[in-house]
Length: 404
Image 1 (tube, one colour):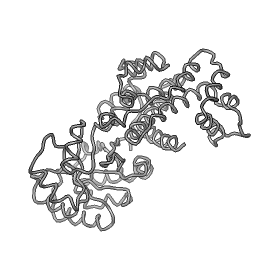
Image 2 (cartoon, rainbow, N blue to C red; image 1 turned 180 degrees about the horizontal axis):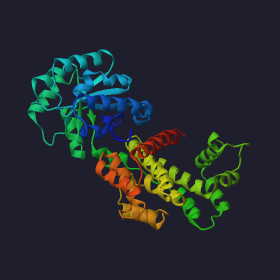
Image 3 (cartoon, rainbow, N blue to C red; image 1 turned 180 degrees about the vertical axis):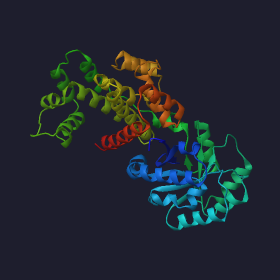
Image 4 (cartoon, rainbow, N blue to C red; image 1 turned 90 degrees about the vertical axis):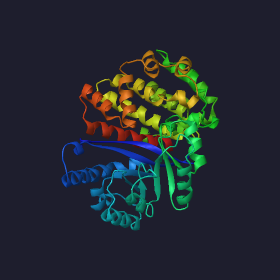
């Protein structure tokens, strides 16, 4: 378990709806053993890990997972449910009759088959897989390619083509024009570049509340007045304090009592959460989900590294880590308007401080940049299994908070 990392990258359809996640796995066993024993060990790790983590990682969608030829032949994908798994066949796979039979068996059992890093000029074996494949992943074209366009047109009736490494709005536009239906890449960590609808707006009624909460002795009477002028916010506050989470013994009916029940630290966290969630729309929903995961994971990390008293700063650093993308403005300008501490402001603008280092580790984890994650874990003395466990806990919290 401690030898495995798993990150995830979202995959969207042409309507910018979430289709699934590619689960990016690091199997350090591959560097330690050779031959079939390695594949058996990897299958065992997949079994153990996905038993408790797979469904949290895919968040109700589908998970795209790479499998080597030995794992395909040995039936390792059947460790996971067919309605939730997309089996990716690597481009380096030696496609022979055994692999073809294995893929056909998986297809017959309800699994979707995807060909990873497909190129028009691949060998005859991979071309045979086109008759089985549901999805074909191709690096995003940078210019119109007549041969590729003809290939997409010939096979597009039976296969969904996925453009990988979509990095700019121009990439996305070209891929759509050529007939791609699914899209994956760094562009979608910055969805504001796709169209103007993706740009969110700050709920300015929350900022005075945050300013009051930042004072050494906040005036709850003043804060209550702000809430009373916002019916929706008041409703959400009362629903929160009367939830099972707070173990209420009696129903809280007034804003003032609700504020006292929450307390300054919890209220600060909740108002920041509402500020972020208030910006959500279909185009940026995935980025906001990612920011919530970052915030919770940094808060969890703060406790393990002995900095729990500054947990709120860790949380805020995570949830606002992409607010520049959400608002379509520079981070330097945004942090001037929001009541952040100097440490949070510094971390968000790139200063190398105690908040920025764990944030960078989480960002590296999201992009499967394992060396950078290893460096942070070495610095803090945390194990990989702990890091993964925190990530899964943060995912579960995010899914609960989005539903609230």
